[in-house]
Length: 31
Image 1: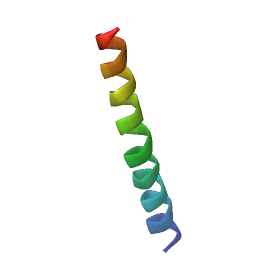
Image 2: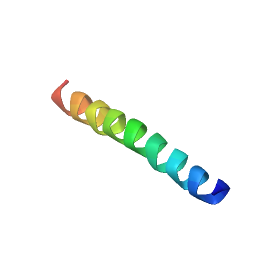
Image 3: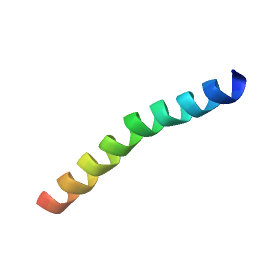
């Protein structure tokens, strides 16, 4: 169960950080 929690936390963190990175790259391309 702990391994599943670690994977879930990692996936959740990726789902939060990846869109921010994409938006930041897109904004940098517009400027």
